Amino acid sequence: DVKVTQSSRYLVKRTGEKVFLECVQDMDHENMFWYRQDPGLGLRLIYFSYDVKMKEKGDIPEGYSVSREKKERFSLILESASTNQTSMYLCASSFRVGTEAFFGQGTRLTVV
Amino acid sequence: AQRVTQPEKLLSVFKGAPVELKCNYSYSGSPELFWYVQYSRQRLQLLLRHISRESIKGFTADLNKGETSFHLKKPFAQEEDSAMYYCALKGGSEKLVFGKGTKLTVNP
Image 1 (cartoon, each protein chain N blue to C red):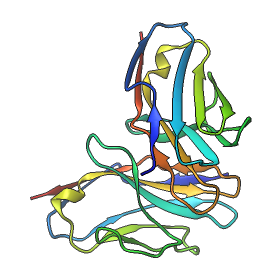
Image 2 (image 1 turned 45 degrees about the vertical axis):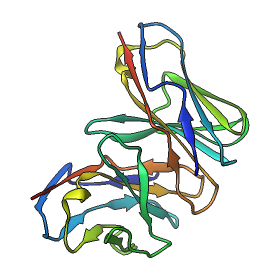
Image 3 (image 1 turned 60 degrees about the horizontal axis):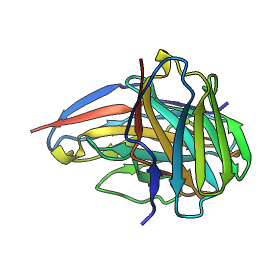
């Protein structure tokens, strides 16, 4: 059974804090993704990675960075959290070609 | 650029009625297309993908390259089909993008 695990289910942070969201997968997937999910806006891709130390910007990378030092772990970093980054964050992973993405349970981040 | 459009935010049908969730895409190459579903309080999960040409839980979807569409259909909706449905597209760069989603409600 594929497991994608996000480190926190709920997180409350203050404006200006540096925030780390962690995601770990156990299926040796090459690809990993970070999305934010907002009502009416669907899933918007923040960053993705297709290999260790490789990353590409998604559609809304501003205010975020990522790190992938090991194949199984993909971290999303909010350098200076702002209230408009309050959202549900979803991590996903997949093999390279033609296969499904498996999702984590999500982290609901509130920035106050 | 890769783009997925789901024109309906909300769709409400009665049990036993046919249902069609629309998805249109924009991509210059050969896309891989998927439908994902998120039931209440559950993780997002794959429902079906166009390359498999399979029927899952009675749902089917056909890729129409001429109309750049990948609509999801089911002839007889069930109450347990109530969920959020997302159409997704993967292009050549491994980038996986989603539409805004359609919330399907099947009424008894």
